[in-house]
Image (cartoon, rainbow, N blue to C red; front, side, top):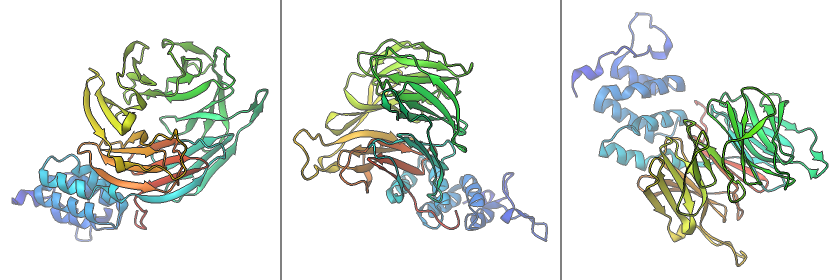
Length: 418
């Protein structure tokens, strides 16, 4: 190791955030080492971001931070920095000490008796929002405490009970958009639970509960709503009017899922890709239970039959990668009915695109390394139930799964110094 790696650099911080009495700033490799062991996670994260500037010695400090268990936040910071490295030895260490291998059950949140959980994380990954039946709940992910429980108004209408079918969180994390079975979108404040605005979605009226899915564009200008009458409605939010208009062609069957790419340029309606302007690009040629954009927005992934997960190029539609999950990736519950179909039913990518979570009818959750196709970890806590929702937090540090009347949250255990 050459001497220049241990010399102070422009971004080196003062140990503890204060100038010592001697006026000397503790920088260089020794400063990085001291800040990593300071117990103050803000300093630890800042030191992790700078450690790789010090060559092999700095990388070794990151590897030590990845292995240790004392600080959850530091471990995630080291993991994020080391993921960017291509050296084989570092890649092996990252694979061996991947934080997802250590995921544990953190919280159980009570949901609804309706058996379907609508869940979403706030953009800062600090809160989990759930809604079902007529109640909006907001949970603190650091403590597991319920911050807000707001019962909706007008929960019964002329057609009976009104319930929430889908949820989307605004990019600023202040409001949520809820699609209700009375064909209304209600915009609610996440701190007060109050309804800010109600938007009526015009449908063909063939179904009492027509709304099925919802997605918001990254610029929060357009809300896409899937319906049972085979259409997607695009609501213009800029004008703040209860106005809807068609931009997408009619689909041959009910709209079960609408997703917007991270850059807002593409839309997935079920398994068909559209441009943001509504031009049909292609339909995937392999049937999948669910289809998703990858976190970088460059590929599409889908969970197919026989527990095969596919990855396609968004630009060309070519298959880039597949994971054929082994037979022991799922179990057949005792007493399951004859038409029970084993295998993966849904999936979610971690934000870094390296880890894939798949869920099963048996209530199991499997975490896979998407690049190596190796199984990282198995999570069990729901029992033999059908998991209806699977979502990673934006920072990747939490995984939430919803089934029946409970929501389970998974992650690394919280530490006192986080």
